[in-house]
Length: 139
Image 1 (cartoon, rainbow, N blue to C red):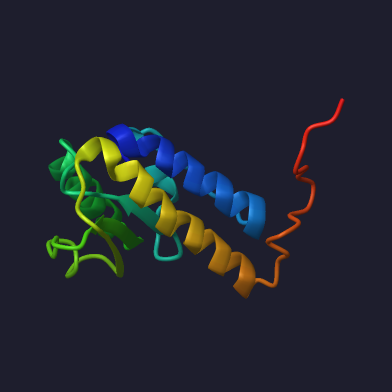
Image 2 (cartoon, rainbow, N blue to C red; image 1 turned 90 degrees about the vertical axis):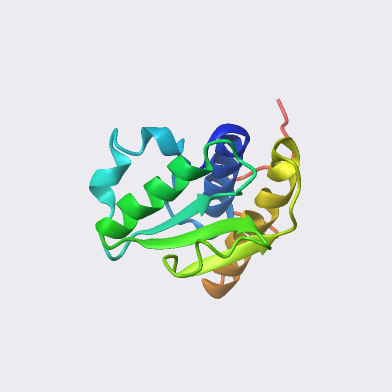
């Protein structure tokens, strides 16, 4: 889940997880959490939150994290290396270097791709040749 510049990153992360590990995932705009996805959150639902402090809506992202925690969900947060605010509440916090807000997607997408890769590897999925995906489009 992400806001602003990082919403498309959330979509990309979910897509990558589906493509190579065959696990259902959905990328959501954090502002839309109350319109459906919140009903699915329980102790078995990990939620990845892209929450760089440079994001203008960072405080709202923290509120989203609290909503997930209130439903006993597990939170994996991605934030800057100098941000310790999320460490106590989130199950895992992945730190990235501090950059300006419009550059953050370049860095926040990397942990999502690596997470997808390692999950696929743990599940013994072939990450080099995902099933039913073409490397090139032919007509």
